[in-house]
Image 1 (cartoon, rainbow, N blue to C red):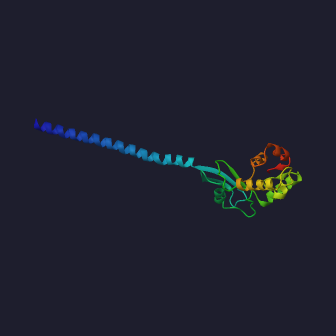
Image 2: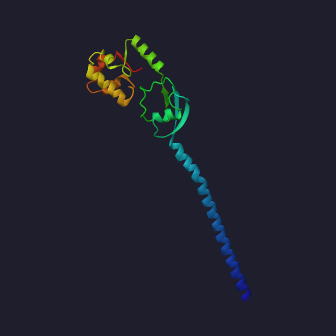
Image 3: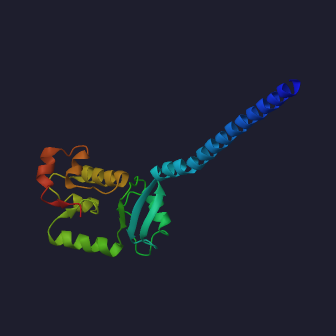
Length: 186
């Protein structure tokens, strides 16, 4: 009887150890699965922090580049190898934030000059490129407003539309109506 009791105790201990070991194996598998999931969740986080931008025009290596979210135009130019010879950067606000899927095109000096000639032929003043004297040829634009236009575009980058000129102090709807048919942003 004593032998049966000892044998049952040994079997009981073995069963407990077996169950404990099985429980450990389950934990190992669970831990392994957690570790395996961690890198994929990191990839998802990384993909949300990346944007793709097509950088072209007057850069050394045009192409599609992945950049960190929050990158600026100067970062896009940098990953594309920098500016190529003849790039016209004065029209570009290098501090502007880039967005996913954006095309960043850097014009050449030659392209900008050609656009200016075309605008001049049409009798339009390009408010993104005009000098103070050229701006003063517009109706209702004196020296102080012309200087304000130049200061605005230097601070904020190129005008995206002719209506944006109304952001300048002293140029509101009435003044815009006088110049809208004489100006361009192209």
